[in-house]
Amino acid sequence: MLRGLTTVAYRTTDLDAAMRWYASLLGIEPYFDRRPVYVEFRLGDYQHELGLLDDRYRAQLGGDEPAAAGPAGAIVYWHVDDVDAALDRLVALGATPHQPPRDFGTGFVGASVIDPFGNILGIMRNPHYLEVLSGLGRS
Image (cartoon, rainbow, N blue to C red; front, side, top):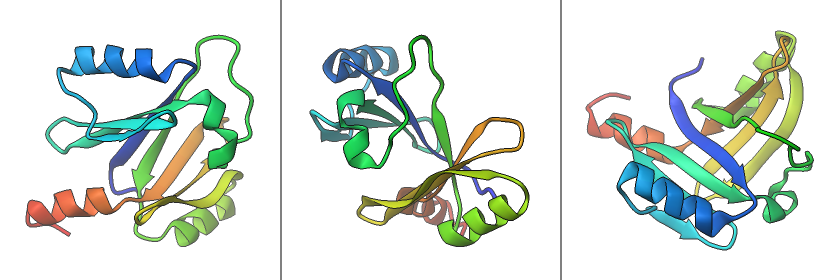
């Protein structure tokens, strides 16, 4: 069911500073820049996506969890062919809905659950993931 990593999204209270830091670390500029809300880098052999989301815009994008008081983790989204079907299966297996399916735009649809062990598991239908696979002669 899980087909591969699509997007790792990190939250920040200073998007410009985070963008500069990650650009320096990665040696590349973001390919997707929607400041002041979000920027995204593509990296690695499979062009995985690393996104930075300004915490001030989180609620507008469907997130309602409060900002962490200390170090925080990230929601890792795994590519699935059908978000609704994958979400139904995860819930049937004991996961608790975390974020309902939502359209991030241009064909990207994602949701997340909390697994039975307390971990956030993101799922996403990600056209970029499918383009990369297609380019490798896979589907």
